[in-house]
Length: 283
Image 1 (cartoon, rainbow, N blue to C red):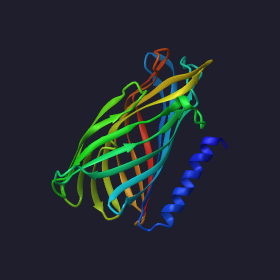
Image 2: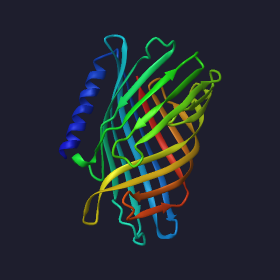
Image 3: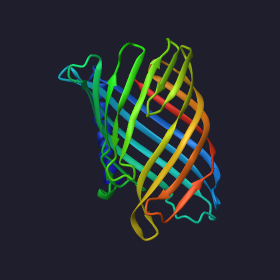
């Protein structure tokens, strides 16, 4: 096992140990696997299929018995399978290894307003080794305003140093129309959900994914490959018990491409279908 993987595994096991023996902590595991079958390329020969999977382990506690703090560990794997007709050199997989710390505190003396910041150091590459050149330090900071139990407004910015797009806005809201219908329109996983029964929730999901990875291309080390796609679909969430939720969803993926930042290679993927399985475990 590579050294970086051993470090991540050690941190993961240590976090599990802390959460198990600290009842005050709120722990959660969120994992998914998304499959996109083979599809043709735009203005190019060949076909490419993708498997995008990830997991995140997080736990939340209150520092000094007042300040909510969340620590997390996460990993991402994107498998790329292309046929021989594809003329662009692409790695067989893309990988991400990261951690995060997030804190939420009152925003001065503004009523029902909070400030949240998250720092998420990570390595983005094409193997499980932690190369210093593939290290990135994304930072998110935003305000949360909750005028009542139904409405939550979010506004801020996300900064991605060394990425092609270094600054992105964070803007959205959550509206609980009633006990069954919720509009969760924030940048991370926007969705509209309807609680059909205590064990079944129906939802519509959408959003975009845009990530950059440092990869080896032919004899060149340190080439930056960008993976981009938008998606829109629908699904069902099943509550197996008070700790475990399982979601199944399917829909369309569009505006898809794998592109090198230096402009020396791009694979524009045609619109395609996706199917996704997600498992959430929380206590």
